[in-house]
Image (cartoon, rainbow, N blue to C red; front, side):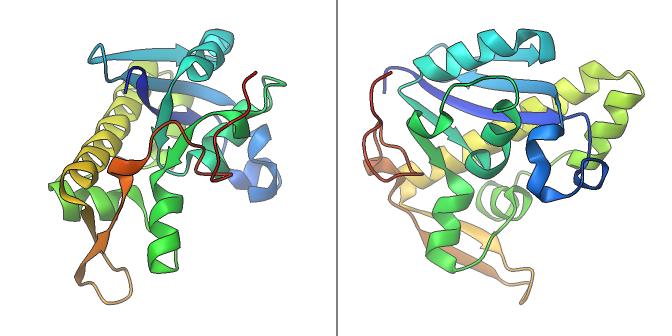
Length: 195
């Protein structure tokens, strides 16, 4: 894939501060990270860089993220009139939810699949942001992007990933067909309309 990017962002506020999960667009962008697979490098964006972030996402042949459709793109919608549903996107959480019938967190998948655990939580990142620790938030976000990339690469190579069920506490394997996904929007299931 010519321009494959992995994406995650952290916000300035939690859901309860903006009126609940129905107002994700009011949480505010603290830090966003893209990992450009072709160049094997990370790009870090702050709120002032949102136009460059949106432009880089629009140029991607495929964006891979974890809960990117419901969360990250909704946060960005407050900053841009661009229709993010037109971006060729593979949301690993949505893909897994379709297979197992319920949501599963990145930590449960990355740990069971690759032996990689998250370094903190989103709420901890918000506290760091408020404490002026921007570098720590950026490092945390980079690490989540790396965990997402490792899970995706494992799934592409092996046709399956694992997770630890929060109900049974048992490791379970899930077949995935991520190797066959090219520039297709996982949100719509069809090729995006050119913009």
